[in-house]
Length: 246
Ligand SMILES: [Mg+2]
Image (cartoon, rainbow, N blue to C red; front, top):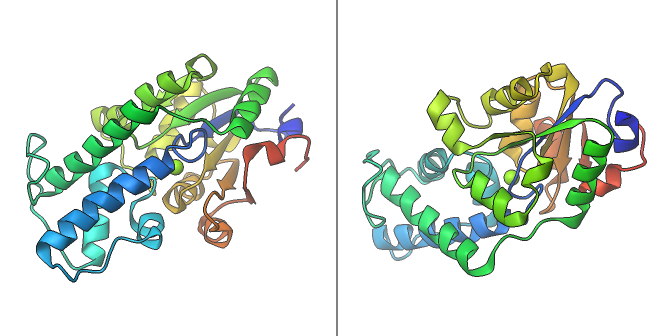
């Protein structure tokens, strides 16, 4: 049955990233990061170079929030103290910058809700109808909330999100830990699971975990980068896979 989904025959489960794969929230995250970092950099140096789309794709997308803060600022040769989770949003600490970014994301979700990708919803329903199981594997600490608001919680058999990762000490993408936990939660071996990812760090995690198939979802014109980091196939929307054979 996996064949009608454009997947190898032995695939039994799908591990979907959330933001940018199932929901259009990657744009929300990117805008929140840009505002957070631009405000922060300008306080340090009014002439600082702005946070760019390339910065988002290379340093931040798909990673746990604090890893994104550290990795982007390291690229600018800035090291901040870690601080603590109750630091105010204007604190010059990793925790403070991460808090500011999350405040902006939550305000945006509150105001505008969550939009899904309709092609991804068709694919998710087709996968379930074909008898495959589905997990959402996301670095987002807001994963449960986003799935609930988007209205497809009934199609998701397991969820590994930022809160689960923190609780269980799982390393974030590009490490494969969270995808491996997703496969385990669905009771399949990595070789029986397909990973669906829009982030460079995410397809790298798929390759690192030796999953049966890695689908790169190119929403921003980085198909070559996704293929290079580990995607077996790159599509612009998941429903391109329906009716194809691998
Ligand atoms: Mg993503």
